[in-house]
Image 1 (cartoon, rainbow, N blue to C red):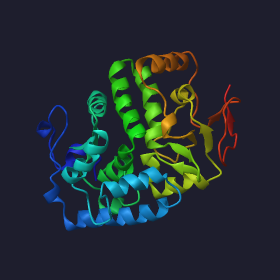
Image 2: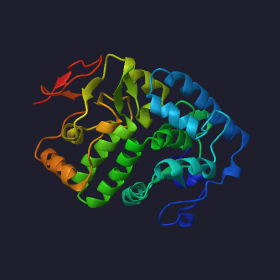
Image 3: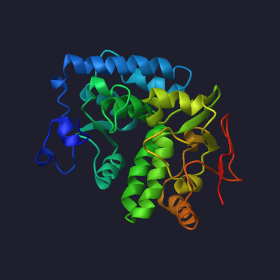
Length: 287
């Protein structure tokens, strides 16, 4: 087993263009590949009922993403581009930061086109097509969310300092990947890292362990995270229309404030934090 995305995708490094965009090779998927997708889909769809925001299911239905098999990007993109100007492009795995930001800024979502092996059904280290498409793409049908992700790409192209890029990455991590949102029906999931993971789906909403804190861009940019375990803190948006303004002025003002303050552990709690829902156990007060 290897986590090298080029090997996993069957491509060699010299076969990858500068923008990392490759053909999805839809006809190359095997019956076993489609079966893996179907099993993942059915399990996760059932778990997400009553736990994820309604906008997610609306996007899933509109795009025709079903349990029948791996989606064909060409078909899916016709609907997506007409709705919000986005398309999904196939890539062999994780792409360099500048390539990633450029794609997002131009409303192209880079999605791995290969799918996990059956023995990796419950856990995979790097994102595959199920995480990228099932988790991320449905909400790109929502205009506010789609605009935020594009603005994030534009923001990434404005910064070069590694510390600033790390702060920016935390905004993405705690929203697009692991965000929660307040709805009229209660707290719901919208982050793809949660929605594509059965364990995290339950943990994010029902466990007493993590902190659930109102989203504040400065607070988020200061907060470290773990990539190999369930999240210790989830930040909660008040709605898609309340997603942070990432245009140059407001983002730089928030970035300047974050630079002037110390970083925070993933499970830190501040006196000024506004806890939301259950599980806001104060385990590690920050100085």
